[in-house]
Length: 215
Image (cartoon, rainbow, N blue to C red):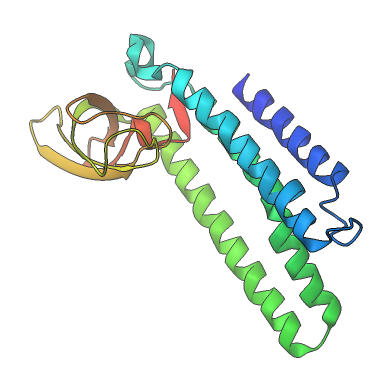
C-alpha cells in the first residue's frame, strides 16, 4: 500500500509540475522566476508540507510487537518515506533544465560539465541503492535491541535532527551509534529499536533512521 501511495504521489507531482510549465521555463510572463518558484520549488515545498503533516500524525511502527519478531521479517516502505520521497521530484526539473541547457550549448566544456553531473548522479544513485539494500538486510535478518536516545541535536521539534544512542547486544556488548531521525521525532530519553548483525554489532541501524520498516 505504501509503495502504491508513493507511486501515485510521484505521478501526481510530476503531472502537476508539467501542467504548470516545468518543461517550458520561458512561456510565462514572469519567465524563469515563475518557473523556478511555482512548478519546481513551489510544488516541492507543498509536498514537503504534506509529508510533515503525515510525519506528525503517523504512529511509530515499533509500538506494535509484530515489528520486533524473529527473522526473517517482512520489510516494506514506511509511510513517512512514501509521502516524503515523491515531493522531491518537481524540484529535479531545475537541474534537468540546467543539464539540458549545457548539452544543447555544445562544445567540449559544457558537455564535460554534463558528464560530471551525470557521473555524480549515478554515484548518488548507487550509494542510495547500497543503503536501501543494507536496510533490507538488517531489518529482515538482523537481531533486535532497544537503544536509548541519549542526545538529540535540538529540541525534538524538527524530525530531521541527528541523534546519539546506545544499546546492548544479546551477548552484553555495549554499542553506541548516531543517525538522522527520518521523520519520527523521537525524544531524548526514549527508546528506539536497533537492528544489528550479531556477528558485527557495529553494523546496525536504528529504526528511526530507515526509509523502510519491518513488520
